[in-house]
Length: 317
Image 1 (cartoon, rainbow, N blue to C red):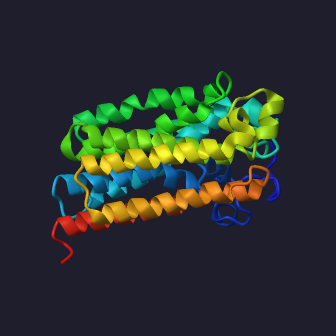
Image 2 (cartoon, helix red, strand yellow):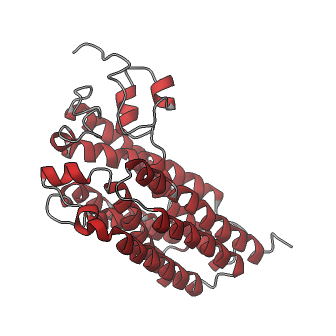
């Protein structure tokens, strides 16, 4: 196969002129695109449950700040495991992606990477993820490995259910459990509540995202909450985000969090409310912008949790 031109080496659902398209060599570019290195929002959203839980458990056990080494490991793990998960998704969905306008330019359906080469790349990313996981205690290692089953089945869920976002939420929220157990070696009520709150958050923001593809999905016969709820997406989204904030609040109470954590949650809740208010399911560009805004929402909650941990640990006087 001849090398693709720069025009055909881009993907339609990445921001034009992103750093991958500008700086990554042509030979390596399809693999960077498989790992979604040109779209960092995914690893931010995968990382936030980890960092939230790391900050929450630090305050609960009386540490002055979240474990910085753990935060770094969760950052690396989120980047590589998001890449591995997206590669797995592209392998299993290669025939579907070829039929969808937004995804047909991705490396596998565009013929720039074979499914076999993508599988090798996915395995390499998985090994890096395993190396990260092995830095933790045995309970956390087993807990992390348990998430792989959910990751493996997720791409097939849109073929059998109108709520595949729930399965995505179960996978993307797992870090809330892992980060807590990485510090104390077991699970308590607070991380479990945080986990299910994150599941509801993922279902909400991915429903917004799915509205970009709802016409193609309907034509192909795939399921999504965007199609399931349609014109009722706004109240469904409000319900998801309300459950998120309620469960996060109970998690904060269970962990004995202080006022700054509650202020962080309030700011987080306000950002989610703005998404509900601004939503227009017929405006694909707005849906994408609202989806990406959840990274900023994550910073608001993390800032509150971390400030509260610093205050309770005596680092702020």
